[in-house]
Amino acid sequence: MATDDVKLIGSWASVFVMRARIALHLKSISYEFLQETFGSKSELLLKSNPVHKKMPVLIHADKPVCESNIIVQYIDEAWTSSGPSILPSHPYDRAIARFWAAYIDDQWFISLRSILTAQGEEEKNAAIAQVEERTEILEKAFIDCSKGKPFFNGDHIGYLDIALGSFLGWWRVVELDANHKFLDETKAPSLAKWAERFCDDPAVKPIMPEITKLAEFARKLFPKPQA
Amino acid sequence: MAEEVVLLDFWASMFGMRTRIALEEKRVTYDYRAEDLWNKSSLLLEMNPVHKKIPVLIHNGKPVCESLIQIEYIDETWPDKNSLLPSDPYKRAHAKFWADFIDKKVNVTARRIWAAKGEEQEAAKEFIEILKTLESELGDKKYFGDETFGYVDIALIGFYSWFGVYEKFGNISIESECSKLIAWAKRCLDRESVAKTLPESEKVATFVSDCRKKLGLE
Image (cartoon, helix red, strand yellow):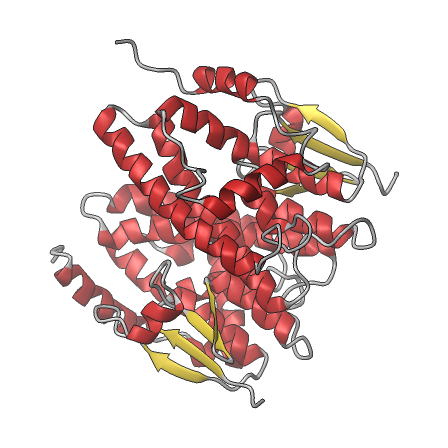
């Protein structure tokens, strides 16, 4: 059994799968990318993640690791000598990074998603307002965490950059769908610049999906009701 | 600089219990400050402006929020005694998965048993299923961490003090449905950190009764 046998169950369009892929790229880990077919779940996925039945699942030497943020931390710990550290080294900075990653998943993402699932203009506008408010909070978090450096993690991308940055493709799709810009130089200037830097990072660029392809996929996933 | 550790908490919170147990396991001296959840202190609002919730751990003036994050922080900051998380990366990921499962599923469902009118039976049924999944993960191990009491045990044990409430309003018997889990809970209660922290079931029951009155459910 090859100890470096690494598989990742996922999909090109999934934000959560992207987190795992970016982490693997940062650590220069070769892996087999097993893409799920849209609309069905493979036997391997169901066997590897029987509790949630969701992607991503990282399978390392036949042992499954589930939940994107847990996978990213696992990659950082299992391959400590490869590539840069993904989590900050100081326990307090790690706690702050984890706090914001949890906020992104539990609060910010939920409101972003609500824009796509909103029924009617009123619900959509309420969701947009909530994303605006939560993005402002993240703008301040960026300023606090980065301390003048280019990324949340400092000089190079790390856990929190990956947690939020993986959403950038979908975020752009939502902006186009809602005809509303969130990552804008006046409202979120630091995040807007950070977003460009993140997408340009060599560990991210090859993985970030094309916006048009993603928008097409979004229309399949969130069909608009017939007028 | 002398170490200053403050915990803003509420006695009945199963989340605050996690942090207290972790601090006790590490023999960390701390200043416990009880919050009135209906009249939150300016310190709480200042230290956790995003969620305005307890528990908040303040270490040398710097706040750490969210109970599971606090356990990890405590483990990393005071590494000498009683490791709370395993050192092996795979075992750590496994522990985090189950703690995350507890956070996603247990409280959300449990709360519906006593705090939402008309949902008690359905929520109670779902709650038992969740406990059975956890019981299956526990298997025949002494603790979730195998021989060592740790992260997942700490994440779950606080809920045990609320079991009486769920049984009463959900009309269920957790002992008869999940006897292995009850046995696990009793083993945890043998630990000083847990025995010192968990409140009496009767006290929780009175508190819930008051909450229900405030929510207009009684």
